[in-house]
Length: 98
View 1 (cartoon, rainbow, N blue to C red):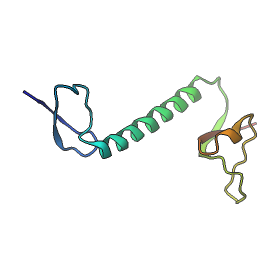
View 2 (view 1 turned 45 degrees about the vertical axis):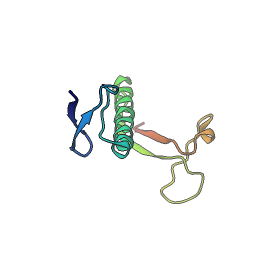
View 3 (view 1 turned 180 degrees about the vertical axis):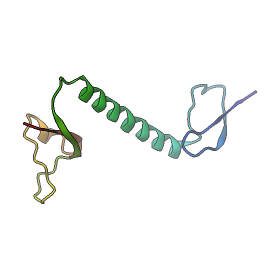
């Protein structure tokens, strides 16, 4: 007898074949969406855990963005070793009070 599960992305009920007992999503589309959501959630958790582990720094804000060498008024230039190797990665910039 096949087990049934509810897809956490779309909410549809689907059957789990005996050969895939750990199947989590109803199909490929939901799988891609679900993995992307999980990845973003774990990244946010890592950032929050890191900020909480810092000593008592006067953090004013945490800005999120991508490194973009082009110029605009909203560009944040990141001066860090190796940042050019990861142009598509997201960065968190902590704004501290002096």
